[in-house]
Image 1 (cartoon, helix red, strand yellow):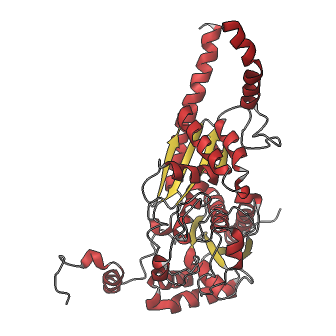
Image 2 (image 1 turned 120 degrees about the vertical axis):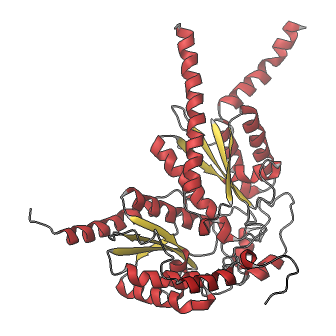
Image 3 (image 1 turned 180 degrees about the vertical axis):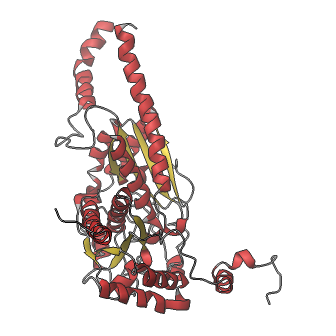
Length: 216
Length: 225
């Protein structure tokens, strides 16, 4: 056996861990014994596209902008992203009513409403199957000792940028083998002034005065 | 220790193992990921046999309401053999959309979704949607945490949405519960949730006992009278 340097060990281990995460997501417990999820690992080009898209949302979604900014830094270290997507129509025949329609046939006949984030209306149990798979992938990564987090923002961005074709929503599981856990502190990209500004905008009840107080 | 006491000790310890395991599963379900870290899922443990029986009877009532819910009868038969049932709820999916505007519900923005008419609570409707799918999928991570820990501990488990819907009907879950699932757990030599034979709702130990009682009851009655 030839000598393998540490960097190659880390990169190779991360790639193999990604495969194990995909297997765990694939075999995760699902409703109706349906395995309709689609998975793909994002390449460097897709990661750059997703990062730029999230950052471009800016004031529309400060959380997505922050995640996009973080992704630009995370790709400089060993990093990988598994995107899991699914389609919205239901063949489960549960007729449970969670989507707002009494039967699955009504849901499937309903006109699709397109949006950048997701296409709806979406079958609730298929959404749960999708997130069960994401949870299984994240748990597998955690057991392997990787730094890991589930991202809705990157999943929506992957769907918007059509990184995976023919899906109606997606969720992303990001894994990293960086020197420091990049998911431990995701607020470092905001200055104190920007944090105050966003906090005042997004959580007005925390900074508002008494009821009836005059707003400046 | 006598032989009879040793057998009873085993049965008591098995029930104690279920008691401990259900709490550990609750812990794992609580620490699994949540959207925004918001704790909007609760978990409730049913361990009493009578409560489980009441839940199973409610499941069987729902099985009669719709043809597509016919599999509820098998769910009820399996859950009767469960040692404990963990009910997992999503509290804010019914009344409080997540303000993400993700369009999973098909209403484009959360403001439109708030104004949408809900389905009525009538027989044949399990969940009064439209629910906020972004909120309700939190339950996936809670249930995933329970299932992951159950596998680690070697506890037999099965996920049932029929029991969650029946628990909502019974009113034993918190107010404004929009969505609920149930995880049955079992500490026995044979899992009641996997590899069950066909028609397990019609042919099982309880139905056999019921048939014997019905067949022999006239003889018993004549003897006693």
